[in-house]
Image (cartoon, rainbow, N blue to C red):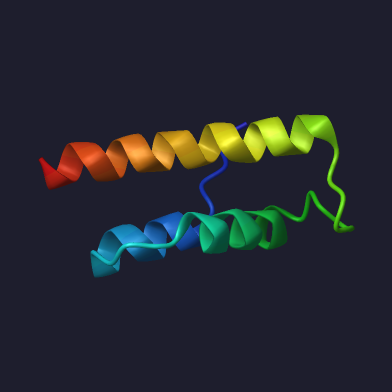
Length: 63
């Protein structure tokens, strides 16, 4: 499955940094995989993985 949250695309176009917490919350909302304040372990792993990919892209672009 190829999932690219809109937030990531918007951020790359505007060249602005996003706070990790905001990215995580927005990713939950956009993907629709978290309906409560206590997401499953698998959901947390997925979001952390996506966040790390995003951070690696940001770090690569800033160097």
